[in-house]
Image 1 (cartoon, rainbow, N blue to C red):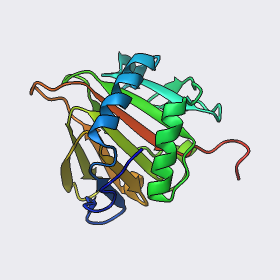
Image 2: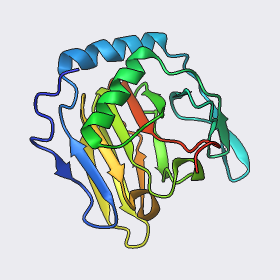
Image 3: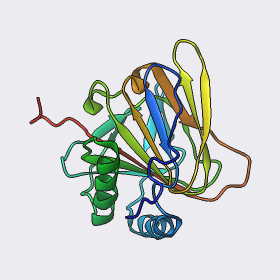
Length: 205
């Protein structure tokens, strides 16, 4: 994996209470195209039901949970069955670890098929992620807008996540901020998003 401009034009998105570091062109255009095609074809895509206000609704998009820890990831009332890490996902995970200095052992792979697929305001603050997790989010394919909103002040940060970019959220970001990928009426192509994190296993302290 080549990262010719790594950190040369990185940008901090959050003004306070945590970090969200955006690194454009983390993955080259050619590699991104190859990775997207392989992931789109090989991933056993799932559409789980999320629980909202006591009712179940289909998730607005497809996703699959990968980890060799055998930990089921639970969020929004969903318990995700783990699939074994693939060589491609492992390679990208190792590149993220090298770039960020953090360790990862799992990834949630998301497919946004068009502008109707979205994820509502949330924080990745589940206990299994640890108290101040570092989450590395790689974008492949179409550009989608990413919003962050401070839980107390309501201050909002918006950014376009482009093909091949890496967004690294760390520190207090999951405690103090929520984030979303909103629906859009603008015609937009498919996007695959890889969110690497280090989940806590029962063997860890």
